[in-house]
Image (cartoon, rainbow, N blue to C red):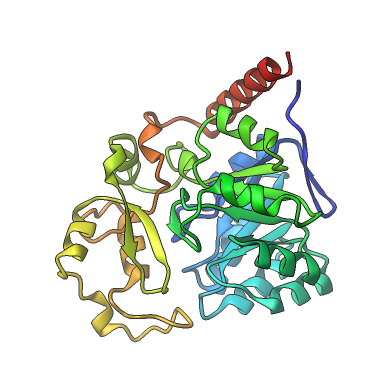
Length: 321
């Protein structure tokens, strides 16, 4: 049994796998291109980038791959519309948006013909998204890394939403291995989005310390942190989270860059995410899904996807028999 292809608008991916768009500068061109080259959909994280930086990343990805390349941009960032429009101008294949909801995004999608895929965590938003013209939705559960819009498990959300809309549903949160992919497909999902598994890849451009925090983590190291965005964030315990809990982080006090539409300024999340990307675990926030502890090796994207597909097909064939 072969894995089903994933159709979003006029796009058809060979594999039903989307690589999550993780900011800041975690999901960059080499990672997105590598996933696209293997038949999945690669996403560049646009949040935290200037329009010129995003333009450069899209161009870089297109040089590295002829596969499907999209962007993931947080609605919460101040330059959301500018980043979306720049992506469209650069010929991006699709736009994923989370951490908020933007009706303007659907207008831009319709006008440009670029598929729009919002991240939702409720039946209400799923229905609204379909009505406004979404080409697919990503249903993200509490197991996911980064900013969360729900405290419900992914499987519960899928059960609630799958019969409420007719557009493709991609699930996110807690998808680590091929068995998870097979189970999601059997439960009615059209595809999966995976972020954490691709952090521990050779193509991901984060520091070795970032990846090692993943592969050396334990289940109890997954925790929720307060985010200036106004949503809880799923992260891994490190020196930064310990300092944050002790109220020792004050980077938000001197912030003069209005990068977010609304910011509590409890600390500067851009600085924290960039520090983590560079390997500074004392000042860096490392987002990760709650099952990141199951990842125990750093491999190439090709190797990761081959293993995922092989295991998913094995499980589906077993169930079919």
